[in-house]
Image 1 (cartoon, rainbow, N blue to C red):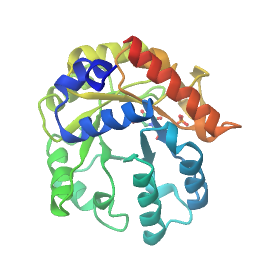
Image 2 (cartoon, rainbow, N blue to C red; image 1 turned 45 degrees about the vertical axis):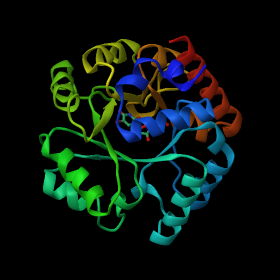
Image 3 (tube, protein in one colour; image 1 turned 90 degrees about the vertical axis):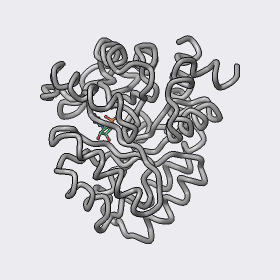
Image 4 (spheres, rainbow, N blue to C red; image 1 turned 60 degrees about the vertical axis):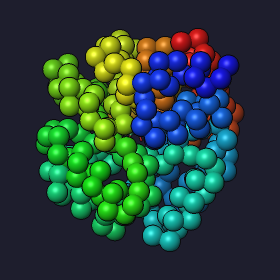
Length: 264
Ligand code: 5BU
């Protein structure tokens, strides 16, 4: 099957360059997996790319949880991620007003200089997206914003009305790459896909082969069901980085997500 057949409507409707890039990487690697690389040392992070890089399409980071972070070490790490054909996604969950978020893309971590994607809440209004886009623009780079339309954690306050408001802004905004959906619940994903239409990505955390409740309010749904319901990328953390054999586990998530896409 060629790439247009594999991705179907999404290939036709998601025309921005980062969506196309993601779909191409996923197609090359036969994997719709974004690894949530939640390790707190640089060595642990390097080890993850070495072990599972070939089975994942994107790498999600929390740059502020790395104990031995330094600017130089991070640069080397990002180069390694690019060499491994990975999109780099900082899950920063911005929430401030546009002009402050614009500055927070710089600062000590300088997220604008290495991220291809970032997450953002829309609680402060639509200018946050423009603030983020301006920061990439300032350094001559391109990036995409994933808006939190839903979350995977128990008791979160993103209700159906809020989700609809986020979609209404994000659907037609060229700076919005797509939406974060609740990977733990296929019905939530299905509803989100229905109102978001075909023209935006839906990426879903809260995915694990062992479904059910996780640590501290996290919830998990199955990789196949998430993709069947309309997710374009499953975000998997501990299911891979805490597995006894991360490589075999990454492979299993890649196969599950890829086969589900082919069936979809
Ligand atoms: P886990 O180990 O697969 O539970 O890791 C999930 C990751 O996804 C972790 O980095 C979270 O910050 C991230 N996440 C999430 O779990 N749920 C959400 O709604 C959002 C992000 Br948004």
